[in-house]
Image (cartoon, rainbow, N blue to C red; front, side, top):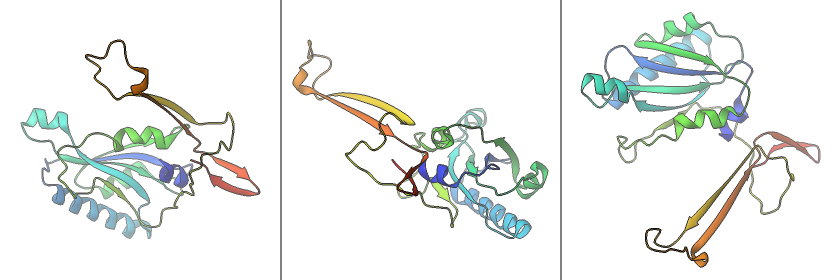
Length: 197
């Protein structure tokens, strides 16, 4: 999320690349994606700036009776307007869906694609991919509350370390509580802009 938020531009787009023909081999799909990235560099003279995740098309797989063809979800950080047809022409292997990035916490929105369970991904195989040269977020952790009341996200969890089926009433000594406070937007502190997490 922090990497996405650190690299967003007014022209950033959500892009999904799918194949016309079924591609069940992960390495074959990655070769197609590599050809696409090379075509982008040839056309625009620079690397495609992106962060993304590959996964299978489960619904398509159910229709076809297989595991599902591979596809990729990307968050692309463009510096200028990009024409849909020109971009589509670079992905010659199937279909392109391009969505404008709306206002709000884009990193959190994109996380729905990045955090899906992927039991079909074999051990030691990459799921997340990103281009070189992206800005790294400046983050640090602290036990001190730095910006009281100005959080972008707050969530809490209750944990019970006992037997939920048989421990009634619940034993308060087996309860744990955790609250997570996150700040994802740049804050001014001592004249330095920094991302506080």
